[in-house]
Image (cartoon, rainbow over all chains, first blue to last red; front, side, top):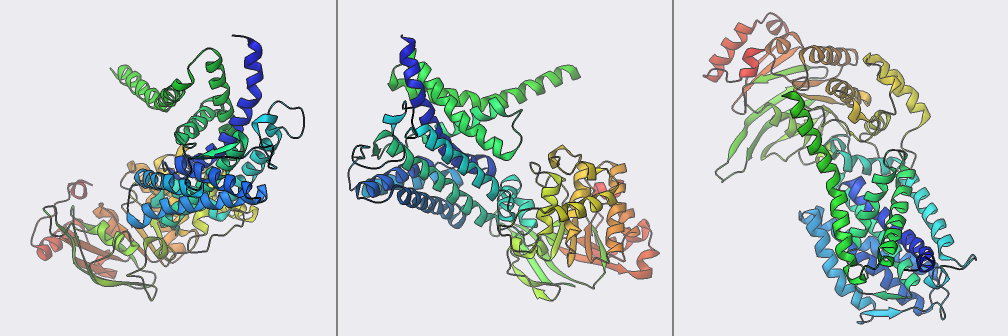
Length: 305
Length: 264
């Protein structure tokens, strides 16, 4: 357990946290704003990664690849949205259906292979794990920070517009939203599209960062996204009231998550046990508000006696 | 202003829970009518309001608001013509959004929502003045989350939001029933003031016979999905609770079964 090993791993953890933070902002849109638990993301992050890998290896511009990955993610969100609103399937099941279907689609995108390499040696990538400890503009942390700031700014603007406000109302109180003339069904579809577009964008960044796209790269993504959202809320909930700061908290939540993982690994945890640990930690954090409520009721009833 | 032409609605048809909520309702409102609606439990009062609002499609009949046939329009499209206040104070506002954001949403009822900023400074001033008329001090709390307000404050705000853009028809569904008597009286007073000053056409369900007689220019009583009593003008003004009960029993051939109504 040499400390230097941990310190060496930290920049990588921050960079990874930033990528997953972008993904988690997508999750925030559905989970917190629209009040929908969307499991499409486990598939759409892979879609984004696959689209970017294929486009970049065939010589396309990296930024164009990111844009197309975003659109592909939106398409995935559209499918989930139509399952939900057009076919009356519960949101959570709609997401699972799309996610499952996307597995086949992602394999197709990757040319019927389970993974595809995109080496930073051969292509001009915007982020790469190899540069995580470099003191230069090549460092992915710089690029990812800029991208995160831009994303938060765009989201802040969008959810402040008339249309964005109507999406927030849809999530906050669909009855009220409809009474104010808001098409809540369409709002949900648009929100799912936006969310999955952002998630796929994160997937496109992730496959560049790790140097390959993998058909299984999205497994458990929703849990990591939720972890980021919840850690962000637990740590900054009391101080960050502004919408932009809330999104920032999500991004920082993802960084904290990866830093903690790094520390746990450094302490000797087997990598194979990581998902179990993640599931347990997120489960406990999700339970905290419930437990807190129960405790409060019990204290109140005791006082009443 | 409102034409309900012989509408009917049965919930869960063909099942064990089948319920004829509206047997045959025919109601026509003139512009400026303020109609109170009373009736027993399950008489179809709220169902009638929800049918007008488009919460569900009707089985039969047509509904026209301000000369436009809205029978087949979805709820969110009908909202362009309607202002609504619900029984549950939680229903009419978005708790996690602040007061001015809620009002800005209501201000855009029936309009296209684009990518302009959701609320302008000019609007803010207008909202401040409007909130001031409620006399609840809400104008000082415009950036507070609505979830922090009391039930009465939320109902008053919902009422204001429902009339911010003048609706062709205001639907009030027992909007004071969940409030304590003092707050209920205040919200009711506010309702009368707004409806009278703005010459709105309104349909108000209530379980309070005294209010039903005292407020508005016309009163209807419902029973088993039909309108059984319809009085207006001088006849209504001269009415007592006893008269009303007698009228109801004669028309419906049954005793009134609404405990809340009898006790209030």
